[in-house]
Length: 207
Image (cartoon, rainbow, N blue to C red):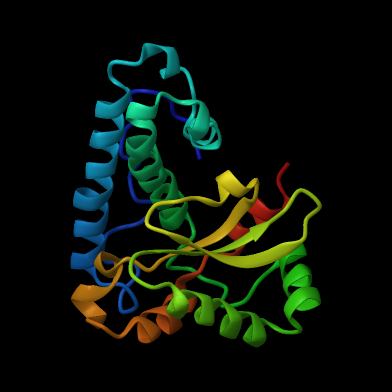
């Protein structure tokens, strides 16, 4: 993923809107990407427009240094910068050519930590169902390579906790409501059919 700086732009989907059907429908992908994600991009650029001293910073750099930003833009950068960053990862975390199981070093790490892929899925789903309201569920790793499952509210990111995102799941209602209505559990179960485990392993193993 190219490291952008201001002005940020909406990255294109790496597949067609309908490519993830029947698990995520074409209409949801269109509104989620072209409307919701675009709004985060627009509002992020608006927040940074009058602060040229931050125009050379990447999204991860901005999000890791929220507390040092001017107070008048901290919330806007947290919400909209996080929205852009999280969605960039989310689109890349899915593929029409899913392997349906972890691969590489990440597969071994999941087995070591959770015992099996099925046990990992159960723990991940529990975290996703347990997120009250809007937010995200993540598989993350720390600086030593230890993995864990966490949940963040709204558009907060794991970067603030010095954790590396490996696998994100958007559990905001706009990510699934057109197809699944209130059935978040069904959305989570079906989402595992389109996880790009190759990409997740790349994120886990890269420096």
